[in-house]
Amino acid sequence: MFLHATASLYAAALLIATGLTYVAWREIQSEEPRRIRFKGAQALADSLPMPAEGSPDMRFRLLSPWETAAAPVALRFDPPLGALIYNAQPFWEMNVRRGGHHTGDDLNGIGGMNTDLGDPVLAVADGLVVYAGDPSPGWGNIVILAHRRPNGELVQSMYAHLDRIDVSPGELVGRGRRVGRVGTAHGSYPAHLHFEIRTGDGVDIGAGYGGDPLNRVDPAKALFEWRGAAADDFTPSPLGVALREGN
Image (tube, rainbow, N blue to C red; front, side, top):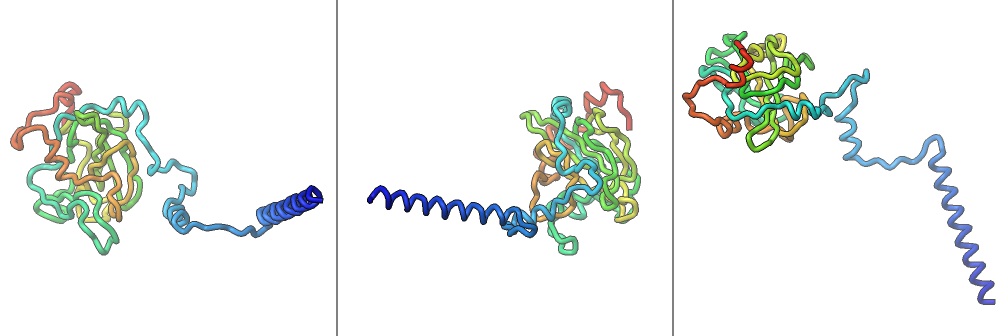
């Protein structure tokens, strides 16, 4: 009798489990299945839409193995513009109108407005051109160089709003080489250079303002710490001399 009762309970439990499994299966197969939504994940998905036409998304662009190996060691870093400049909007300054913190330095000629339009923009260190193009009207022409610091760390310098680009992707450039000229992002702003320093091997263009610096670092601080020479030392890059580069 005990065995009969146990068997009956087992059969009942199996029947209940089977029924629950069937209900769950029907729920999944129904035309309007119940969906469990995670607000954080959904918000992230909404903020990272993929390109509509299937074009490559620069936010997921990483340095290739060849680019990683080809990035030259940068023993010295110099400013990207001449001495007669001022920083109109420093790194991580809050811009309420733009809705976020500034991701770089906005470097202007001391005359203001468009007085520096067309001024040469120079590579801050020996580097490899990993991007040169016009990703959007708000950015205008952009150049990104990859550098390898003496400790092996990969860093990048970004030069934005250029009036023109004077280098090509895959090209090695020496420190002090002209990579472009100061521009206005096709008339979007008064002439200035938006300059960034990034760490890591991501080549994303990103946004000029944000709530998190991600891989951006303070450009002025980085150039000061990585200078590698006296402030009044203007000797040319040996790589630049070897490449016979001119400005």
